[in-house]
Length: 77
Image (cartoon, rainbow, N blue to C red; front, top):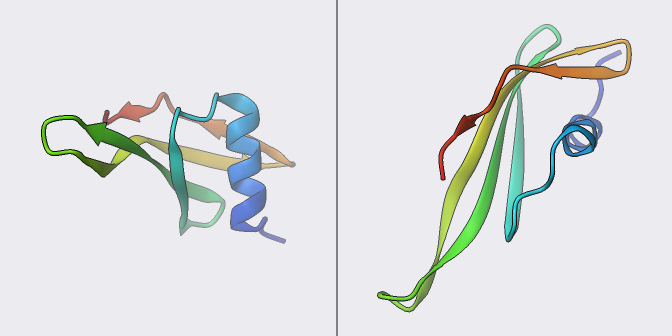
């Protein structure tokens, strides 16, 4: 049985620290038990006086036996 997106997100944030101003996490089942997990956050732009929503990091992970193994993140921020 495949885990839910919420279970995958919980396992990820047990491994890594949630980014400051976390906005959302998108869990995408790529195939079988492998997932692309994109983590988004908000940053404030002082010049434009508004918040920007940006991807903070992206992970490619494998779920097996209740554990999540991830490649090093692609840091976007």
